[in-house]
Structure formats: C-alpha cells, structure tokens
Image 1 (spheres, one colour):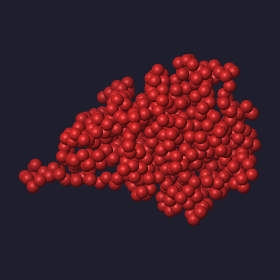
Image 2 (cartoon, helix red, strand yellow; image 1 turned 90 degrees about the vertical axis):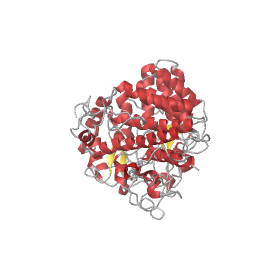
Image 3 (cartoon, helix red, strand yellow; image 1 turned 180 degrees about the vertical axis):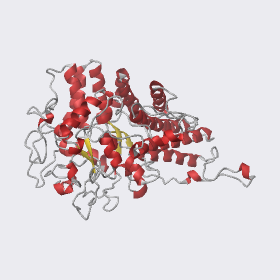
Image 4 (cartoon, helix red, strand yellow; image 1 turned 30 degrees about the vertical axis):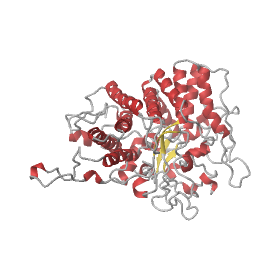
Length: 555
C-alpha cells in the first residue's frame, strides 16, 4: 500500500458501534464510539489524518479558499497576483491580495477551519492508537506520525493567525480558547509534537507518504528558523543533510510526477488521480492557465489564478556577472520572450512568459492564455502543473488534474536554512556561500528552456555562483534572502519570510507603490504594521465562542 499516493476513501468515521440495549446506552448515531476499533480500522483513522493534508473536507470551494499550498497567502506578498477572471472573481482572495480583508472574509475562515479539521483527525487517531491492545501494531511510530501532522497543522495556523488555540488529543475543543496560551507557549507545544515525532519515528518507512525521522528534523529546523534559534537550525539541518537527500540535477523535474518523491523530497503532501474527485489537489485546481486546448484539450478551460507579479519576475534579472541585481532589479520590466537582458534560467521554469515555450515544449505561452486583462502580461505559474502532453494529465474537468504532489519541505530549502543560520550567527560565512552556490549551480547546470523550434535557448540565460570576494555578513544576508525568493518562488513561502524578517510592512508598501503603475487596483493600498502580518480570527468562531476566542489587534 502506498499510503497517501493512493488514498483510501475513508468514510467509516460515522459507523455505529452499539448493541441492542436501553436507548440511553446506545452510542449516538453519526458519532464514532471510541476504544472498540481493530488495528486495521485504527490505521484507517491514521490514513484519514494524512488525507487531511490535502484540505479537501466538505467541498471544492472550501479547498479553493483554504489550500494547503498556501497560495492564497502568497498573494499577500510581493510575489503574486490573485489572477482568475478579474478582481471581482473570488473577492475573498482579492481582499487578501489588497490587505482589505476583515473578520468575515471567507478565505480567512476556510484557512482557519481546514487545519483544525486535520488536527481533530490526528487527535482521534492518537486516542484510538493509545487504546489499541495489539502487540504487533507500531503504536509509538503511528502516534509520532500523528503528532508530526498535528504539529504541521498548528504551525500553519500559528503563522497565519498568531493567536490560536492549541488542541491536544485530550483537550476539550469547546473549552480551549485562542488566548489560553501565550505565543511562546504555543510554539513550545508545537515543538513538543515535532520532538516526539523525531524521537519515535524510524529513519525510513516502508510505505511512500508516511513521515519519517528526517521529516521531523526538517520541521524542527523550520520551526527553529521561525524562532531564530540558529544553533538548532544548524543541528537539525545537519541531520537532514546526513540523509539520503540531494538536489535534483534538473530544476524542471521538481514539477514532474516521475521525480515527485525523489531525493529532494523531505516532507511532501501526496496526491493522485486514482479517484480524481477525492484525491486530486483541489486547493490548487484554480491555478491552471487558460491555455488553448493542447493535444486533445489538455487544460483548455483553466481558471488562471495565482500569477507571478511583475516585481517577482523582474527579480530574476541578473547582471553580466550572472548575479542578482539586489537594489535595482525592478528598474526594468521583464515581459515577453523579446527581453534581451540576462536572466536567471529559473524564471522560465517558474512562469509562463509570452513567446516562451510552455512546459513540455508543446506550444508557446501566448496572450490568449491569460484569462483577464487585469493581469496582463500573465506569468501563469508553471511549477504546480504537469506538461499538457504528459500522459498523466487529466484532459477534462477538473482541468489539468494530474496527481502531482506538493512539497512542504524540499532539500534546497534545507540548504538555504543552514546558510541563513550561519550568516545570522556570522559563523563560517564561506560554508554559507557554498550552500547557496549549491542551489545556484543546480539551476546553472539544468537544461535551459529552448525555443520551440529547438534552435537555441529561449532567452539570454545567465547565472553564476557567488565569488568569495566582498562576501560580508550584510552582503551574504541579502544573498540568502534573495536566493530564497528565486529558488522557492510560487511555493508559498514569501509572505512568511517577510514577516519573520521584520520587513513585511516596508516591503509590501514599497511593492504596492511601484506595482500600482502596472496593476491599477493596487493604487492606494496600504499594509498596516501590527495588523496585516496576521489574518483576522474568523468572526464565525468568535460568535460561536465569545468567551474563548478574541480578535487579533486592529481588526
């Protein structure tokens, strides 16, 4: 069994385990009677918890508004536009992009609700595992898996809302509020989950999709980066780097099914098309370019959400030395394939650009692929869809569904975490440089996007590693932060980086000011420091429990 790649359709949570006794002794219908399940049934609860990573609980719309990939949070940054059919298409996500959301925002509600449903499944599984009397069942490892997933869900909530309720397996969710624990105490609870997972998980799992000790170490490192605990970052990344991981030789293979559980995958959400309407990545379904209908209709009706911003695309400009232009990258716009200046080759691995071949080299990305004139010149995201001529692509609704996994932690980010830690400690800066250069050299050595006729590179690609000269702490800090933006573009990290670096308000207001010249709806938008770093607590939750839940500042 490949535990997540081929999801179980788990619907027995509402089974009734009762005997013909007095009515008052009968388990209520629709509720799982705990403590009576077999080992095989308990493991289905575990699988149900894994399936929660996809965020597809009650319907497609809920998945669109609260995706596990966090693309709706990425549009809060300077990296992405909402996209779609115009600014009135999914106004809830448009409000996130323009920092105009309030506590009634639908996306804020769904992004809150989906992780808590995942936590509930993890806690149910933990309780049942603990009650299970089966010597052959790997109780400690399975509980560790559930605690890692529970930590993941709480981590996601904490970064998005700050003031959250932490729910353990024995907590009464009707009695726990979002201010019962202070921020440090919530982080400590999350760390305890990750640490338990690290202490009790095996190095390897037999089934693809189950988390292991490396995934736990990766999450301990991710948490330590968030908290600026740099010694811990170095220790945990060293452990991951001692494992069976490596950078894929070809950057473009990060977006292929063939390599999705390959050597760069540390912690990955598994999807499949085994049952397309249950197991596809519904949270990213909207993010497929409109397209012209290639090879029998492959994604001919995509919704074209989640587009790269002009600012981000411009960040891929390089100098004649092949290095980024930290301070003046946004002075010139990179538009169509006719742009002749030097570019980091990852730009055309990441976005559609007019006149540049799309994935699979079946056709050039053209203006007709862009669904709304509000978002010209396009920049549809390439990373999270497979090529239209790939045999795995689904050629009818849901458009471009493919079963392509989503990587939460990949090895390139682990290298950049350690580089950042070394730089912040001002320790072994040359090693940090080498780690960043490992990531850059992978991009340099990857086969570049070619012209459709195969006559040469599709653009003037130029990327080089950083030299040792003038490699000061200040310069190295700029380098690692810029490298994160380029390497991890459109993977849901940018907004969180801006917040943890303490530059969100400055960066976003600079972005709104400059980008408004190209995107009119950003005119006059303001990011308020002390407010917009976090989403509002959903008013729905406060109304249900006004003595337990309290609103974030300034909302």
